[in-house]
Image (cartoon, rainbow, N blue to C red; front, side):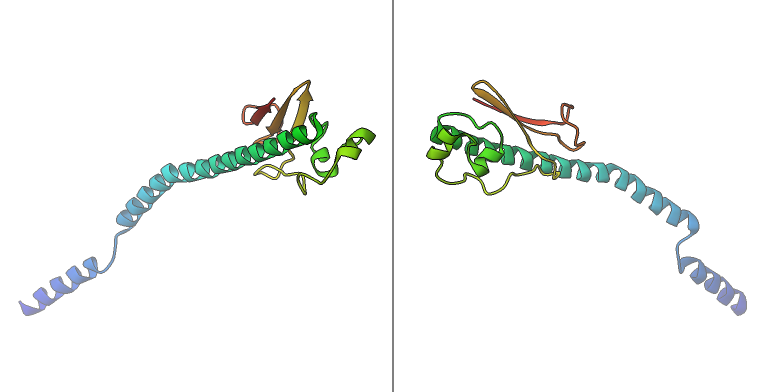
Amino acid sequence: MLSSRCRSSRSLSRRQAGFTLLELLLVLAILVVIGGIALPNFLGAGQEAKANATKVQLNSLKQSIDLFQVRMNKLPETLEELRDGPSDAAGKAKWVAPIISEIPTDAWENALTYSKNGNTYELRSAGIDGQVNTDDDVILEGA
């Protein structure tokens, strides 16, 4: 009688010592589901932060363009003029100092594009895909 009781308590303690394969698979499945929900949210937040950083960069560049316009009484032809000064002789005579030290890039390390149309201009980042004129472009217009 005593030996059967010892055997049953030994087998009971062996069963309670670890997890079953089914329990481990269930926990793993729950972790995969939680990861599948959380990971896209974290990745999306990173891209949104880069888009916001690019907007800040474009606003800073807009202020530099506006300063150039006040100093030179015209919009720059290219972003390089903010650094190097105007290419014409009359503009070089008015040029005092660089407005920016280097041409900035967006948060994805892509070059920014600047286009001038009369008295207005557009600053554009190609966005995450690096392709200009797609839905993810970050655009700032100035007058």
